[in-house]
Each structure stands twice: as structure tokens, then as C-alpha cells.
Length: 140
Image 1 (tube, helix red, strand yellow):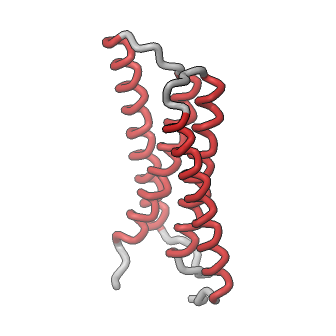
Image 2 (cartoon, one colour; image 1 turned 90 degrees about the vertical axis):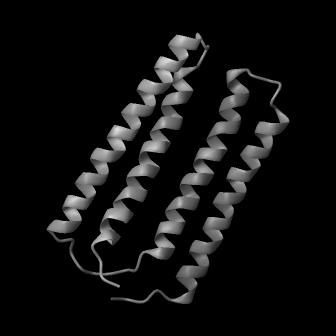
């Protein structure tokens, strides 16, 4: 197993901090523009948060995962497939729940924005579950 050198870890930490700063800036803009509900301002706020969280999560996974040249075995393939199934179930459950709540309470939800948010939730849950199922069988 190759050990990462300090420059790779430092670079990934800088990317992690930049991603968190971008997400924090978007969250601050949410609280500044809380009275404005037009879709254009929501898009200007949601995308920096989603992009910042995506960059932060990818750099976090690059920091904690060791670099190996080993090809994945059958257990790893099953873990990835299982994580994909669970991520799909989470994604479809959230979509069904949000549509039913919007229908019952008669909310005016812009589902074109909800699709992007749910897509990021699905991608993050797949990444987290893949890491979890991959590490579940490892002996420390």
C-alpha cells in the first residue's frame, strides 16, 4: 500500500477548506435573502452550497482513503452494488415523500430545484454507503 505524502494531504485539506467556505458562503446568503423567494435567488444560493459540499466530500474521501493498487474483489463489488441499491431506495423514498407532502399540504414546490437537491443527496449517500460497506469487512 502506498502511503500518501504530505503534499497530497495538504492539497486535499486546502480543497476541503475551500469547499466548506463555498458552502458556508451559500448558507450565509440563504439567511441574507430569506425574505426573497424568487427562483433566481434560490438558484444563486443552492448551487454554491451543493458545489461546495460536493468538493468538500470528495476531498474528505480522498484524504481518508489510502491509495492502493489492489483490484477490487467480489466483496467490494457486492458492497458497491448494495450501496447503489440503498442510495436508489433513499432517493426514490425522498422523492415520493416530498411529492406526497407537497400534494397533501398543497405547497408550491419547484420540483426542478428539488431534483438537483435530491440528486446530490443520492450521490452523497451512495459515496458514504460505498465507503461504509467497503470498510465494513476490513480487519483493523
